[in-house]
Image 1 (cartoon, helix red, strand yellow):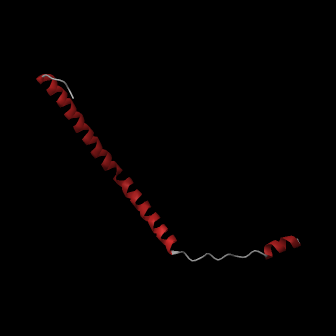
Image 2 (cartoon, rainbow, N blue to C red):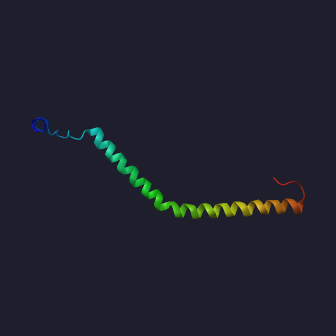
Image 3 (cartoon, rainbow, N blue to C red):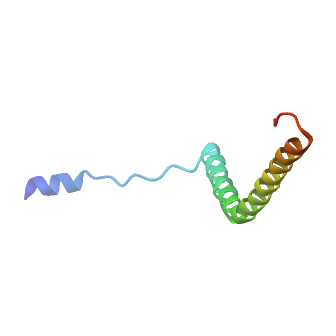
Length: 77
């Protein structure tokens, strides 16, 4: 039992050092990154919708070019 008391008696509670300026800056940067990621996640459905519309327009233009080339002669690009 004495060895237990010895172990417990030598324990020192370590005080946390004050937060440094660099640590505060890193914490703030992390918070900004989390906020930016959330904003991007919130915008994702709108971005996907616009991307789908642009793909459809590009595909229609491609088919229009193929038809135009076929009707007017020449080779498709």
